[in-house]
Image (cartoon, rainbow, N blue to C red; front, side, top):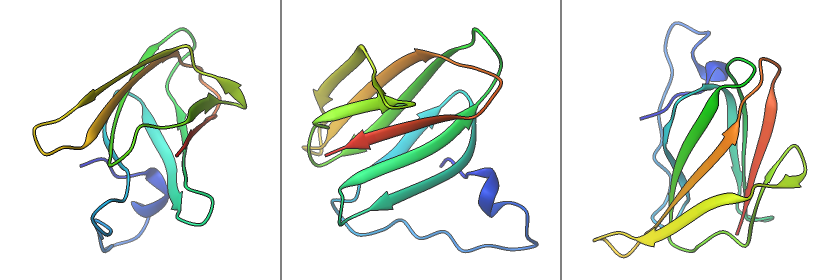
Length: 108
């Protein structure tokens, strides 16, 4: 489970896994500052950072393949998608990280 920094600043917090069919961040090798899914716009948004030049790898599981994946508003060229045993789509995304916050949008 990946928890963004935005929920870890309190003494306690509640984790809701969401409804079946909601996209989920499976793994990431960077700092997640915030994460939000909008069912209305079908957009899963993260703010992430690590250090300049870091090869960031992200894995997202969702019922559908994303129509586009954007990093700071530009398409991410390195995306692989495959179907899992549970009939979900696992998307692997790679990009070069930065020390400043970057915005990753996964649009369905």
